[in-house]
Length: 303
Ligand SMILES: Nc1ncnc2c1ncn2[C@@H]1O[C@H](COP(=O)(O)OP(=O)(O)OP(=O)(O)O)[C@@H](O)[C@H]1O
Image (cartoon, protein in one colour):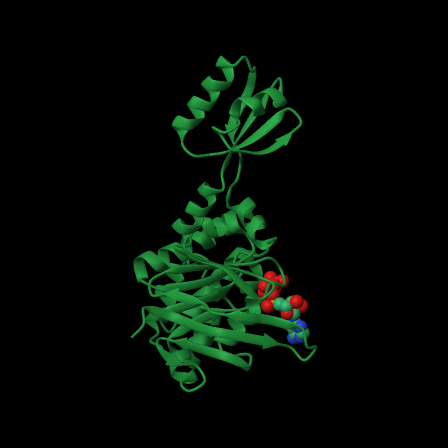
């Protein structure tokens, strides 16, 4: 069996309006990973997740979960996963515990499971408060607790930190990491914030306009990032500096009093600095540009 818990092959999808929403989307979510599914608003993340959950009818391509074809074994597959797509549907007039009890009955899981999931999402102390008194972050955690009731192997979460305040974002992120680390759950989580995914994902898929632009371990994305890094140098005379560097250090760009040079290594930075000074160029500032994942993401998605 493949090591991928979720695998889609060449998914194409369009709504009746006719505009292609997904194009040849081949997603591979490894077992045991936190897979950050990244893309700007409208990229096609929710549509992909809804297809994977069988909430939208597949048009072209294939969808396999746990090595089984979704179209053929949907019920069996759904038993093994928990999901949170769009707004959580909670009974606001009931307490957290009562909400869980409602879902526990329909999932037919043991009563003790309620305390276990409350503990996992750190809502034990607030279990007897009505859900309408919960903060958005607490509501989100209660919804995740519901998704965890039947102890699924796989969790699919659509933008779980959307709309949360900074502490809510941290709590949700820590919860996702804990569920992966301590409970061994594979988690597919969508987001439009790269910095957020960078803090928790082991694997990343970047989607834009329905196409997958990058997929692989987070380290591969970070390696790509360092390849694209540059040193910014501020000098008194850019023309002279360019002449001095010519042939030794590839200048990417000249902008006012600043030069952008391809970054190779720290040693090369020292050599570059020395070369400029020895040739009589005044160096006012020298530093690595903030080419973080956010910038890389913009670069990739603007290609
Ligand atoms: N029911 C629908 N009918 C027609 N077009 C739709 C429908 N649902 C979504 N779309 C369009 O499909 C595209 C992808 O939407 P989708 O919700 O999958 O993106 P997303 O990446 O999840 O973005 P967001 O974070 O904004 O939800 C968008 O252009 C959206 O307008």
